[in-house]
Image (tube, rainbow, N blue to C red; front, side, top):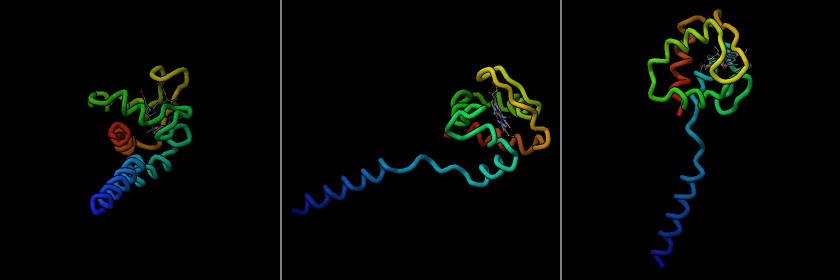
Length: 109
Ligand code: HEC
């Protein structure tokens, strides 16, 4: 009888673990991305005009040397890496904020 109760509890707990949502996205970073107008073309999980940011993180995982080039590309604008579309320049966001955003994007699980 006891064992049965424990077993049910275990099943319930593992179900809860399986249903856990994906890792939360830092709301402060999402806010910065929103204020920087990145979200008009990007989403964390879905490709919009620009690639999904989790795909960007996946492509460059383990290649920290790309960070500076990506910062410059977001700043100046550019294309050729994901498709036929072109990212317009984001100079008003400023290099410091862009660097913070790119580091965060690259760290997305
Ligand atoms: C006008 C639409 C638009 C806006 C606004 C925009 N992007 Fe993009 N972004 C794109 C497109 C399109 C690409 C794909 C370019 C390519 O294929 O090389 C891209 C690519 C990227 C990449 C990957 C670049 C590579 O070479 O792999 C990063 C990182 C990125 N964007 C970050 C940002 C950030 C951060 C902002 C806000 C400061 C931003 N983007 C704003 C359209 C946009």
